[in-house]
Image 1 (spheres, rainbow, N blue to C red):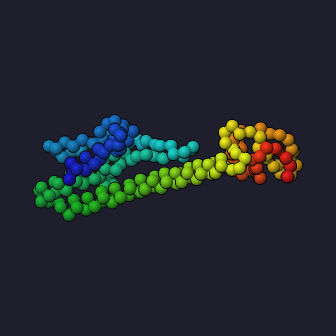
Image 2 (spheres, helix red, strand yellow):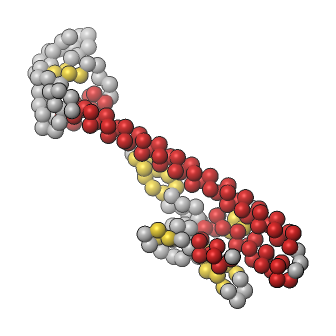
Amino acid sequence: MLSQTVSLANASYQGAFLFAGTKVSTQPFTLDTTTNTVTYNGNSATTSVQLSDGNSINANLPGDQLFQNGSGSVTGALQDLYSALTTGTNIPASVTEVQNALNQVNQQRVFYGNNLNQISLSESFLNQDKLNLSQQEKRPGGSGPGDRGYEFRAGAGGESGDVECDGAGAGIANVVGLPEVNFNSKFSEP
């Protein structure tokens, strides 16, 4: 069981170890099979990922926090359970230690659940933003890149006149909610 746990704790994705902190090229855990001792080789730092402008999340939990936490060490509990089963002593305490370690892992799962929710919300926001921009490009009179000469209807006290504006500028005007943006050819008072 301990060797399977260490194998899981050494999981990698695209060549980067998931639980090594920021030492993603270092295998985070080693198991000495003669003593059943597990050593953490990573660090306690976290990596972060930027989801959108000004919105980033921590991308990982360091392995020592997840598997060797003082509140419930998975590797320590499994080592103690192995010793208890081998010697036939202290088995109830070892089972309790394993339960505490599993509770600690479950608490750490909340971190990943929260990050998945944040990623999902950012993805929804960005998809809605993409849809809004796409719909603006399809309006009559065009607002695609390179189109010029849109009609902007100004509010009270506005002035009339010809205006040149590229498609991106008109799209931004509409996104920020300027009143009655009409994509035709003149700038005039209502």
